[in-house]
Length: 439
Picture (tube, rainbow, N blue to C red):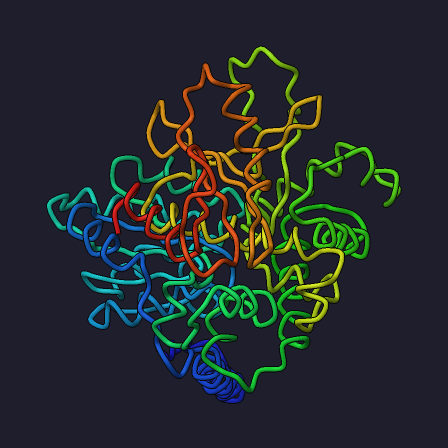
C-alpha cells in the first residue's frame, strides 16, 4: 500500500496514518484469505468470458453477493491486476484522483465492486478510447442492483460486454461433489444451498451463514441505497416470500399482512428481483383469447436461502412438508434460469393459468414460434393421469402449436406417458436445455 508523505503533518500524525493503513492492510489480507474458497469449481460461464474478453475492451460480471464473481476472475485472469473498491484506500483514490488510480493499474485490471465508484466509468471511457483496439482491458464486478447495468451501459456504450453469474448450477456442483441422482441434487440444493462457499466447505454452519448473508444484504446493500423504511418489515416480507415460493403473487395480500402499501410491496419486489434474490416468472398471455391470470409467480434463485428462511432444514420436511411440491418446482425453475443466463440468454420462461383452473407450471420458448410446456411434479413414480394437464393445454391452445409436453419429476428413466407427453428425468431435461442453447 503506498504511503504518501505530507510535509505539513507532524511526525506523530504521520506515524498514526502509517499505523492505520498497516493495520487495515493486515485486516484486508486476512479477510481476503478467509473469503476465497479453498477449492475452485470451474464455472459454466468461463468459455463465454473468454470470448468476450477477446472481443470487447471492457467486461462486467454482475450477480448476487457471494456467487463467486471475484473468485472466478482471479482464477481465470491471474495476470490481471486485482483491486477491490471495498478497500477504503482504493475507493478514496478512485473518487479523488481517478486518472492516477487507473494509471496505477497498468494495461489489464479487475476492478471489484465498481458500483462504489460510478464516477470512475467516465475516465475508463477516456482510457479505452485512447486505444480501442486493445481488448479485455478492464473487467468489473458488482452487484446487480443499484442501476449498475444501466450505468455501465450508459457510460461505456459500445465498449462493454455484460455477464451474469448466479450461484452454482447442478452441472457445476457435480464437478466437486458426487450427486448421482435427482433426489441427491434436489436435497443438496435445498438443505445446503448453491453458494460456492457452502459447497466447498462442509464445516460452515448453514444457519449462521445464511443469517449473516441476509443481514449483510440488508445492512450494506439495502439500508445504504434505498429508503425502505423499517428493515424488520422488509425482512418479514422476504420470509413471507420464502414461505410462498413457487406461488402466484398477491400483492394486496402481502400489503394487508405486513401493514404496508401495495406500491411499497412492488418497490421491495423490484429490489429483490434486481439483486437476484428472487425471480419473477411472468405469465404467458400474449394474443390468447381466453381469460388468463396476469400476476407473476415468485421463486428464489437459491432454494437453500428459501428453505432456511422458511425453516425447512431436514429431508422429512423437504419431501413431506406442506411446501414440498413448491420447493421442487423452485429448484427446477432456478436451474433453468441459471442455464440460460450462463449462456448470455435472457430466460424465455413463462407460466400459464386460466380462469377455469388450467395451469402449466412452465412454458419455455427456446426459439421464436416454439413453445414447450413443462409440468413439474415431486414424485418418483408418475402416473399417466399426471399428463392430463399438458394434454388439456395442447387441446385448449392448439393455435399456439405447442411442442410435445414434458413431465419433469424424480423418476429414474425417461419414457412416454402418452403420444403428446414424455416423462423426463432431471438429467434428460438438462440435456434438452443444452440442445436448445448449446452446451
